[in-house]
Image 1 (cartoon, one colour):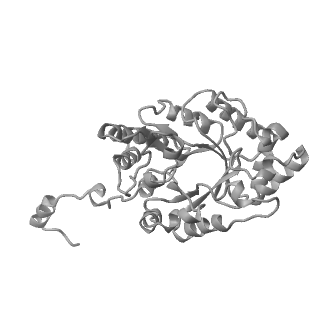
Image 2 (spheres, helix red, strand yellow):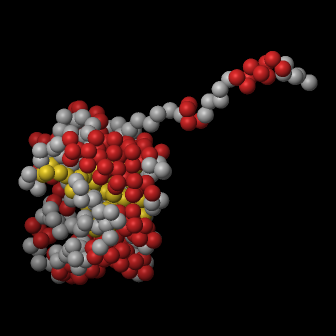
Image 3 (cartoon, one colour):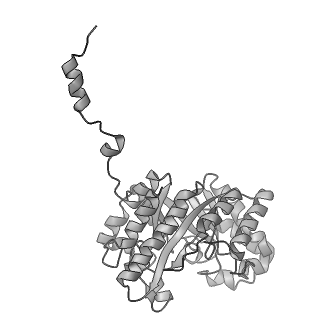
Length: 343
């Protein structure tokens, strides 16, 4: 039998042991951090709806977006909305949506559909068509028959007090438009994850409770529903303290959750103090998702301040994204990383 000499054994004892942690490769990119934390993805919205301002034609922007270490999922901000995909009844146009689907497939990224039924950005033929209930039910069912990895099938069905928003769909079909749309989406693609998506449901409250109750009722009625989309349009220094608690209540209703449109805006101009607080706020949100097994991923509502919707919607506010308008990483980026690395 071969035996180690005493001197060689002593030499081995002097060699430091290298831990797995010491030799592990550093993680680069927000999607890589999300997956290391057990999530499916970290993603971004993007917009190619305006031919004169197609974000994908911005080469430096597109280079960052195409990096699937940073972004493992893509959401079309506009080009899957009704006014783009069915501008006239029965005539579908998926040209711009297909461009994004091809983009995601080429880069190994998940495509999230956004959205099927929403009260906004509807063509006039829907809002002014004076359809009866049977006609509108058929229109909704036909429109929602699209195949993607996951779908925001119903978008923003609630008022902030938890009552149902009055829309052409609700006013004509009451709440039946919701199972009609979800059922059509399931028939179109049995593998797609079907979501209801809304804002101001980040923390506990009347609107969150209404969403949970709706999901429970849909489950009871055996209507297909897989997830709740928590949009996450937040304000620096005012992030709810009950995000994790709220997510756990949603998951307990039998669905997964995702943060679908995250941005955290501030009063302009941006200051070092506001940017530091924004970093903490991003960390808070990401940590909440990281701590809840049923939170599957996070999407920012575009990754750069260059293309944020905030400045045109909230006068005097802006700078909500993890990258600035010059495509430099902000402190918020590192807040996201820290959230995924939290114990």
